[in-house]
Length: 584
Image 1 (cartoon, rainbow, N blue to C red):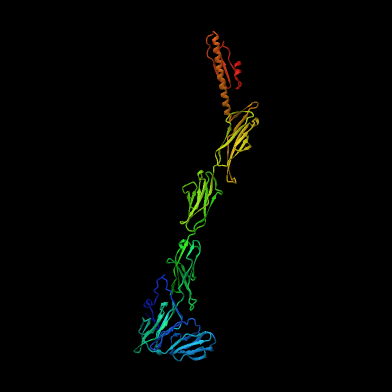
Image 2 (image 1 turned 90 degrees about the horizontal axis):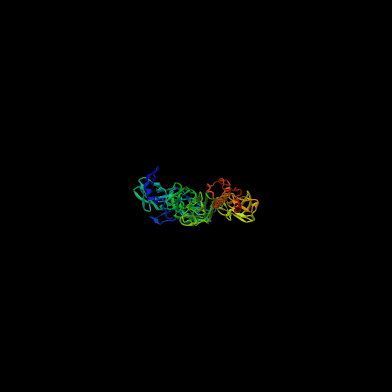
């Protein structure tokens, strides 16, 4: 207890311990039921206990000056009746009896008793008592709300000297002092409602006042937290902390604080709503709110609201590829991207290629660098949020192998054909992805398409060089074309001859001529030796010395000693026949 400057007693730490709010932070306040109607307790020592409160739903009010209740006669009390209708229509009652009818709305009180007034259309006011007792406890004639200060004033008749004053609440001693006659209690809470009285020494006599009932009204109602209990990730969350201000003080400033799992979300705000534009799974939890009065003397907590944020399962998985079309040349690079139309939370991406039992990649993008033949196939992307899996449609990737090493195969495999015969040339490539197209060139000019070139009734006009060009392309638009050119194939037709010589180069022709010359020289030597042996059998001459010979290009010369029979032949035509040799 502390003494004020005017001698009154104000409640200090002890009083706060008795009357203060014992609620712990974050604890929900119990719902309080508050009534605004006035009520009167029974008699005490022939004196009526007074009630301080509102008249509830009645609209006719009885005001008192000075603004203390109960009023005391020695204060020169004035009553004012407020309500609808004209002032001249006011009817006054004292102790339930008509005392003035259709009088004025103001009345100066000269007698103790219980007063009411009546106004047409609004009815009778609540009662107000004027006492002329030896000891009276007075409280402010105002509506008391949570957070207010309650002033208790113990007065002796005609303000005579009063000592050893003590105050009581529900028969609990609130303390007092030897000389003080007032006590202030602050801040008021709902549970501070109840009966108050005072005691003191009047001279040498102990005197006790009548009990006065004090009703503490809610400054605002206990808040109710409203909002969705379950929502999907990515959607907005709106929580409303609903509390109704008292009609006795509708403009009282209030602050709202929101909590999740006991932790403050944001800062105190005037708005009763908490808005989260986009929620995540981490926003799940137990939410609550508190409403504070200005200064924080009144705090009330809401119920707890459990909010669960659910992930949206992934769906609508699609693939894209760069370059478009999923076709790339051997050795180039290719990129695949996986996208999800719907799905929230951490997502995992897995890449698969049909025919491959192993995982080929992770993440939303798959890079294939320096692709090879084994990279071709259908690719799929699977997306998981840990609980469910979604899969894309397959995307076909084609690795194009450029054509290379084009060759021409003569058919049939013969080096000579008769004039008028037919001949087929075939073009092929060692490597190359289908489709491959073939173009035939004769002496550098385009003559045909396709892998086969059919030559019918061969004549001199077919002489010349032949080549084939093998082609394949990347993409249907043909933005990249690959070509392979075969070696030249020479087709020679000898004028005036019924033979056609096929050669792949000058080396082949020389090889054929040398082979023919070797056959002729061998046959000629055998013929000369046979002739000489025949002459030796018929001639008595001694043996002739051995022959000496040499091969000079296409001429073969044979010489013998003097006296021998001549045997020398000049070969000028490589097509010399056996009959011509016998003529020599």
